[in-house]
Image 1: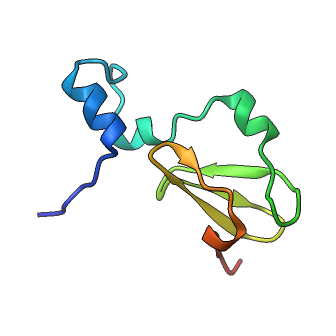
Image 2: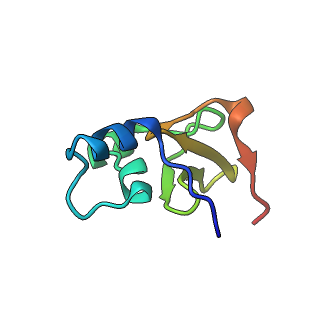
Amino acid sequence: MEERRFSAAWLELHQAGLAPVGASALEWEIMIPQDLLDILVCPACKKALVLNKNPPSLKCGECHRVYPIQDGIPVLLIDAATIETA
């Protein structure tokens, strides 16, 4: 059976009955407001980032760096990014 990891924040909200209705843990993990997405840029090249849902991450279309999203928080550190080919 596949093991799924949920963020501590989501589990706490879920147990309290406060998790967003109909939102899975994955959907909740990547609930980043659009106004925030509109201003986030790649720390390396300063170009716009695109939200990826699986795995939760932000990808730069210019330099192809992929920044992880951990516990619903984008980790915009160049050292934390991976570089996708293509």
